[in-house]
Amino acid sequence: MSSLGTRAARVVGATAAALSVSVVATLATAIPAAAGPVVYPSPVNDTFYSAPVDLGAYRPGDVLSVRPAPAPFGFVDTDVVQIRYRSVDSLGNPVAAVTTVLSPHHAVPGRPVLSYQHIINGLGLQCAPSQALYTQDPDLAIREAPALNVALQQGWTVAIPDHLGPDSAYGAVRLGAQLTLDGIRAVQRLPQLGLADSPVALAGYSGGGMTTAMAAALASTYAPELRIVGSAFGGAPLSIEKMARGLGEESHPAFGLAMAAALGLEREYPDAMPVTPTLNTHGLALRDSIANACTNGILAHGAGQSLSDVADADAAFALLDRPAVQTVLDANSVEQTPEVPTAPVYEWHASDDVLIPVDSITATLRRYCDAGVPVRSEVVSSPDHLSAAVIGLPGALQFLDDRFAGVPPTSTC
Image 1 (spheres, rainbow, N blue to C red):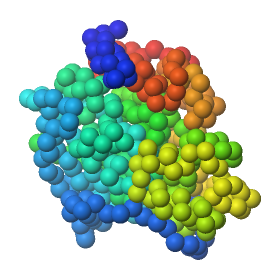
Image 2: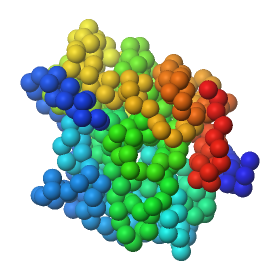
Image 3: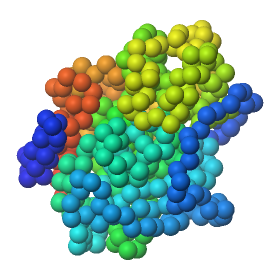
Image 4: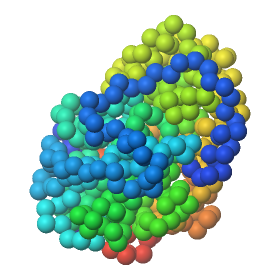
């Protein structure tokens, strides 16, 4: 293992111890009339996040505004800017998005860019990285900070997008992928960063891994000009529908995540995903209790529950089978996305991960291998989903370091 992998293993180990146009058209024709209210997150009291009135006049990835920011807690020798930029939602409507860009002091022009999609299992806007980086709340902590520091010490720039968008639409993976790719465009279009010609890599775990995988798949059609050299994702639920059914059919300690994903998709597709009308009194109370919550709150409120506790189960599963809903679920599942990455892929997951459908990972990677994509898949020995993140991250960083260095990829296909 090179110095990067060794250093990452040491720091992370210590921490562990302590859409394409066709899809838009299909969705537009499949969506029925609106049914029921949708609960959106409370706004952030910061005008930097607001969209300008002439937002539609800008291109996806255009910089709208920039502001300097202090180095977040846990980061050293780091310069930070936050970029507000123009992107699009799942139906192609313009939205304003934010990415937080960390660079080492005295960074050289043309240095590598790592777009890191942080785990955001949340429905509140305060869960977004641009907010979470500046709090010491353990529910919002960026646990990967030590490993990202290693990347910064290598001379890389690290961009961390708010990939759930302005409505914190947890589960809207296609939205997240587009925000990610447009965030990279914005980073490369900001002259002061000196990154216009830089090579780019993508990385993320869990929900961030899901967004990373989708961005890698869509890049060739959505942002073909980006010079992406590789992607690394771990613990990624590559099928939204399978995850929802797996966490919702029986009582599950992580049921809150399935509930949050349903509500997030309802925010992004309020007409096609009428979740709220299916909820019973208890379901409505759970919705309201997690509408602005982050990971710990969502897990605590939803622990041990199932779909039959929050809704009429027959009606809820019938909703999943509606053509319009199935279209949304397929559009936001990497397994069902026909595009494949054009750069090498590194994937890792725990040997016994009960939160994600591993068969979807197997099927997706098999399709990538068949298409000629170099894929390296690693099963890490880990007692749970979250521990696997820190155990596998050093290998992911080593993989990306090799891609930036032009080392030929190896494959487990």
